[in-house]
Image 1: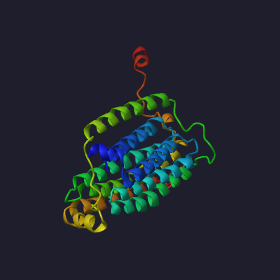
Image 2: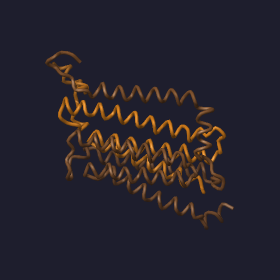
Image 3: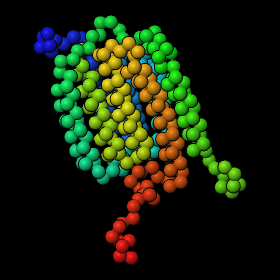
Image 4: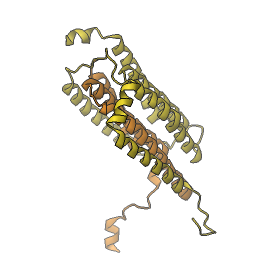
Length: 179
Length: 110
């Protein structure tokens, strides 16, 4: 069974590999481009492709949450951060630090080790995608039955983080002495 | 679908993020690389949840929590980066050396 499926991949496999290549390419461009704003836009491509992967894995609720939160707010926040720190619009030659070769060596070593390990460990594992596992109904059901307490704790944490961000980034007037 | 496809993609995405964290100089770009690493972990969680057919959908719920956590993290991180930019005029992380250890041999000879 395994060799037959490896030799004749299904349509989902083909689409997954193709979108995966797009995601990887966009991620590599995101961490190597010298134009800071382009890095944020390549991050949009990578995270959007990842949402397509979630859809292929039949986790549609997670996919749409990814589109809404990551593409809708996180990338916009990052673009705000780039603009507020006065990032240059054109290419900036000092986007990378001096330890690029070391970083490349560490990343390649980690990738080789982990890919070998993962392929060796899960060579015979197959995902059954015929019945969807992760529609909004199923995930919402377990989210509000099993995971209610962590969910509420997370909302408090998000509120605390937002208030903390406002407090940290508020402009303090030094002359008046008040915070 | 073979489980190896999403697992290998997640590994490669994580390593790309690792390279970005180590090699980038602008603090906002480092935060973007952290986002890539978090996204790789999310892909693993979703893939293994669908593979194991977990009745409580633990992997996908954790992915939702992870997305919310990364939104909180990026908010706090950008606030700190903005504060550093306002105080020091730079966001290049290798120029922020106020907390660096002093050179030990020089101290001993003084």
